[in-house]
Length: 243
Image 1 (cartoon, rainbow, N blue to C red):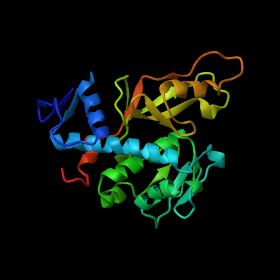
Image 2: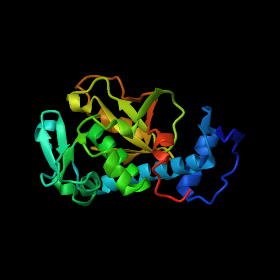
Image 3: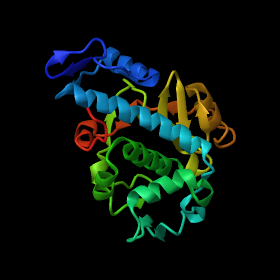
């Protein structure tokens, strides 16, 4: 259900791309009430969610490797390795460093949770003013689930998933701890992207994780009923769109 400025929204009050229209209908048909102070906040969420999906596809098509921290790599022109992750070099603009991950993927290697945070940053960069992005995220530290507070990631229990959400497939009998599960971006139409596995259906994600179990175990990987989303309302104030 969508409520904007205190009124139910049944049909889009603006022209949408096909993916934005799909996202709109997920929001409208959701059991959760999605509230917006004004219709521009709704449009911003549709744009940012579409950019999340596009960013996930772009990372899948890049040459970024799947790697644990010990063998990980980030372009040393922009990032410095520390015990807690990769720190943005002081002279580098955050927007330049984030774009480089997607443009020069062969210089990078990281695991799936880092991939999700990188996708979040890149999607936000596509959606807000670049100057605002550089002001908000001028002290980036990237690894695992480390992220700037201004990114505003919200994780909640529930199975009312919307395209652009981040979800998690849990693998209880993993052989290698790196495959305890897979963080994924929901692309819509039963498609997901998880770094290290790629793009596939829920069934294909589970099948892939089941090949990474301890020998002789039978418990299947499964989708956890929780989702992570950005704070769309907060970020909408920095939108580069004329809304």
